Image 1 (cartoon, rainbow, N blue to C red):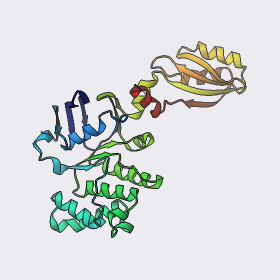
Image 2: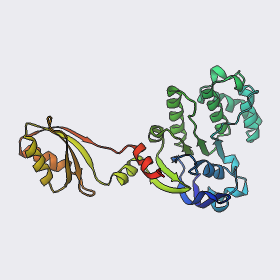
Image 3: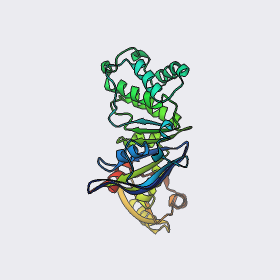
Length: 307
């Protein structure tokens, strides 16, 4: 089911937590929802799940407004602060959640077994939730979000408290789920976003400041292609001058004079790879390195959200 956010606004007193934002998430897409603390991520997710009311605008799921309340059964939600009944055994809690979500009584044991396997809870399934580590509690939270096989998953910091191996497992799980479901994933772990999400949306002070793939955001941030090269068997100053003379090259800088390493920035949207290669062939120079220089997602995030 597609999610359409239309001119969504939410205020707390005089503070606009979400300020007239619009975007869409399509079925089979995993959206990484990023932003600094207080940017409006969690508030937006709570409105999508109908956990809190919308002040202005609307949220459509499959073409219907979430405000009529009947679409909750299509949504699985893992809140930022995972609320669990610590006194309950894992399997009893999942059975309770399945019943709340309207899973047919005869199917509940099947769904519990599937979630136990999917979320790696087999070794802990007979324990009380209060006896579990933070990482396993998070897995229980994921299991309850998926117990009713929802078409939409809203996951707020789903890998909090997990160790590196568990993060990889949950990341793979989310990617597989994203092939069939609509997933919105909030996290502060930026490499996780690149590894898991098809698209990234960055929000700051209640407004959307970026929307696109990691590659697109890098291009928008960088502006020009930047590559680092190493050319052998040529005189350093001569190489520098010939690089500067290439029609596609905007700027050349030394990285390592001794080893003839340069950083080359192309003009506008042009690429200088072919021009550099042809120049080396014409001058009988050996081009031993040509490495694209990518802006890190962390740098893009910082540039867009700095106060």
